[in-house]
Structures are given as structure tokens and as C-alpha cells.
Image 1: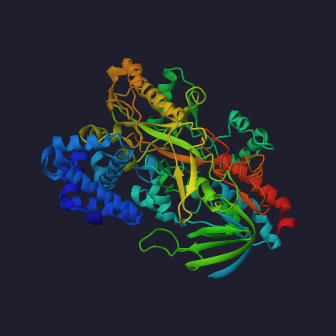
Image 2 (image 1 turned 135 degrees about the vertical axis):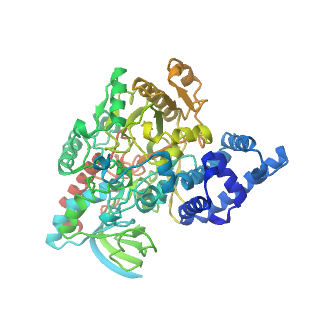
Image 3 (image 1 turned 90 degrees about the vertical axis):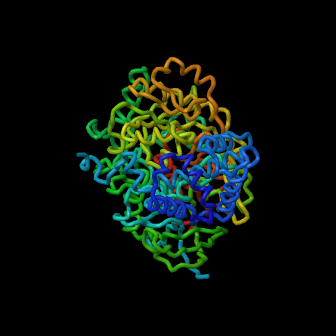
Length: 131
Length: 497
């Protein structure tokens, strides 16, 4: 798991941000984790710490309103929690969500398999590679 | 710490550093020792794979995600042999007369800059692509503009043998783009200039600088540095800073110049995305063929065609979940427009420095920039629909998707537009200012020849010289300014060396 992030919460966040991730098999998740790990490897320790803290907040904040941690919520409730963070009146909270969302999107769409799935097929040969 | 001696050291190898290196390189024949110190790596031709995250990690500082201090905007700039000229699209624009007049730098004229800019446009093979090389993503933009009566223009680009990979922003895999890595730096090296990659300059002082050479990381791209890893002290007669609008001010932080870091600006940008009902050619062909700048003065935005890669596209779409995925899964049907806000240099926005001397960008979105982004988004939506798009993603809308049937409601949507820093996806390129040219130390850092006030042997030759936003893609203007700096150094070399 990248950065010792809480696995259940992280995967629940990924599934909420990119619903198609529900179809990922174990290899797909491994690929996603590897992309995230590579992306974060050389980032400052302070940024990694903030990310871990933010993910922990995502895990436990719903307990106040829903009585359950994030990963145990219904998908609709998960989406409401994340939308709330995305629109929070405090800039730091919005930025925290933005950072988490960016990492999730990099992990999912940074995989070669995702490019194939969405039909993206840029080729160094350019026009010559067109069928 | 090892100790070396050079006559001239150029810090950075992008549009500014590459140009200065080439222009000063004839001095090597007279025995003048010149080195270019570049923080990034030098990649071999076969290492340009076009794979998004892999290339971003190899060619951009912080993978293209350098954050402003509040985290609300990412800044993208190159860090490699050739600097940002490796990762731009090669769009080559003359400096606008209205902007240079407004800069009002004593001794700097538009005519002089234009003359020098034209020299580099010829040298770097700038021309218009033929119609058959332009893809539908670009043609639809032109068609939409024309249908609305807008004055759309074609970008001149600096490519040679472009195959249309669409991967310019990840470094051309076919070496077609004529950046300083392909034109100026190789010529400089042929003439005897040494280019030292993976070499970060840590500090400068009068006639000396310290630098650190990093080893090639395991599994990383690029050649090892020609110098052994470790710290170096370099004695030098002339220093030319071309490290860009963040790192050049950072290297001048110790000097008693109150304007260092002030006047930073950039082009805050939003990527607008629309979906057509049929596949279009988008990820093949040069990505940036047209622009629309008729609203630069009135509404403070410029529109450009663009085509990005899966992760950048995903990051640039607002929101998440099913609506977000719907756009991503329509990739072969997507059309894209880049909205650039013409952001004036403002007292609040500046480059400061952390305890280690690294640059920190304090940036607040000014009302004009927000207005420009919102107006640009609405105008983009009009162009998309005029070009036949079925739906448009609206990152500043209350609802993220606008259907074609809602085109009549665009005015209403514009009135209710919501721009929220930290939520609205904005990233910036074209970082400018921080070491502005001007009359004296109270209003600027350098004179009109890039010489740092009070320091006859210290010069700046990059986009940090801009006193305010250039409002267009900047590299040709940077080269023109660097050409002036090199001229002044050549003229004064006998006295300074």
C-alpha cells in the first residue's frame, strides 16, 4: 500500500472518485498502487504526512454524521462526504481534497490499461499509425 | 568541495540559457571558458516514450505539479537539457507591441525585440503547418470561431519533420520540435561551451557560485552528469541567470534588492472539454494550431487549442464520480480548448523563499484573472457548440455539464458561475516576472540589458525579466531578450573577463 495509507479508506475513496475502479482486479489495484507510490516517492515528507492525515480525517469524519467510518458507508453517502470536503468553506480542506483526488486520478488514469479502456491511443508515429 | 574556474557560467538551459550559450559560444575560440549548469537531465532520443507520468517525472519540476503556497494552483515548468522548450508545443509568437509599450522599460523598444525575435523564428524553423497536418480538434475550434464571427488565428510553430504524435508536452518522441535542446545548445557545444546536467546551483556570490551535482537515480532517465556527483565551488567572472521565474529570483535572494521576487505573474489556465457525438481526430496531429486573442484587452483571456493526456485531462475536469467518468470514457470524441487568463503582475503575487532558499510562490487569484477564466470558459462553450459539440464540461458552472440544448442559457450560466480556489481546476504555465527590467533598484532588479542593478558581472536572461504579463506564449520573447543580454556581455567581455 503506498505510503502506508489506510487501505480500506483509500480504496473506498478511489471507488467514489472513479466508479469504474470497482471492476479492477488485484493486478489492476497493484498497478494503481505502484503509480501512486512512484508519484509520491520524491515528494516532500511534509506533503506525504498531510496526505496521510487528510485520509485519516476522511475515514473518521463520517462517524459524526453517519455513525460509520467512510469505507463502511453506502456509495451515495461516500459521495456526499467527498462533495462536502470539495466544497468546504475552508481553503485548506478544499486543497486537501484536491490533492487526494489528484493522486487517485493519477493512480487510475496513469495505468496503461486505463488509457486503453477510455480509447486513448496516442502513438509516437502520429498520422502514420492511423488505421 | 571541489573547486573549478570558468569565465562565464550560464545557469539554466531553456529559451534564455540556450540562447545566451549559443550567442556567447564564439568567445570559446578566443579561449574563454563557458559552462551551462542545468539542474535537469539530458535524455537520449530513445527515452522520449510519450508515456504520461514517466515523461512528466523525467522532464518537469515536481512532475509538473509544483504547488503555490496555498496549494490552490499547480505550476508546470520544464527541468531538463533545454528547459521548458523541451515540453512546450513550439508555438512561436512575436512579442505584442501593446504589451511592450505598456512595460515602459527605458531603453527597450518593440522594434528591437521584434527584429531579434524574427531572427530566432528563422533559426528555429518557425512556420505554419499545412492544412492537411491539422486535426479535427483544431479545425473544429477554427470553425466554431468563424461561425461566431471571431477572428481566429493560426499559430506558427517551430517543428521540423513533425509526424503528429500529439505528445509535444511530454517531449517530442520524434525530435521534431526545434527547442534550444535541438538548435541552440548543440551549436553552443560544437563551439566549445560545456553543458553540465544534473547540476543545481545552490547560491551565488560576487565572482563565485556553489553547485551540487546529483547522481543519476536508479531507474531514472537520462545520461549521468559529465561531472562527478558532489558539491562544487566555481570561481567565475560573469554569471548569467536563466533558471526561470522561480529559481532566478531565489538565487538573487541575498542581494539587497527590494524588487527581487516581486511582480511574479503567469497564465492561470483552465482546460475546457466538450464531447461530440462522433469520434474526431484529437490525439493525433499537432495539438496546438489555433488561438483567439481578440478578448485579451476587453475580457483578459486568450483561448488556444490543446489536447492533453488521460491523467491531466482527468485532473482538469471538475468534480468526480459518474459525470466525471462519462467525459473520460468519451476520449476519442473529446475536443479541448485552453483558457489562459491574462493576469497582471500584482503586489500580492510574488516569489519568496523557504529556509533552504527554495522558491515559494505566494499567489492569490485577482478579480481580473477570475473574470478572464470565467469569460473564457463561457466563450469556449459557445465555440464548442458552434462547432457541433453535444455537451460541454463547465468547471465553473453550478452544474458541471451543459447540454447543447442549453446554449441559449449560457448568459444565465455565466451569471451564476462559481470560481472557488482549491476546487476549480486551475494550473499555470508561462511563469514570468520576479526580476523585472526597469530604471533602477526601486522599481526593478535589472536594467534593460538584463544586468542586475549594482552588480556589473551579474545578468538575468529569462522570463523573470518581464515587468508584467506578456499575454502570449513567451519563448520567442525570452530568446529575444536573451539575445540582448548576450550582446551586452560580448560588448563588455574585454573589460569584464
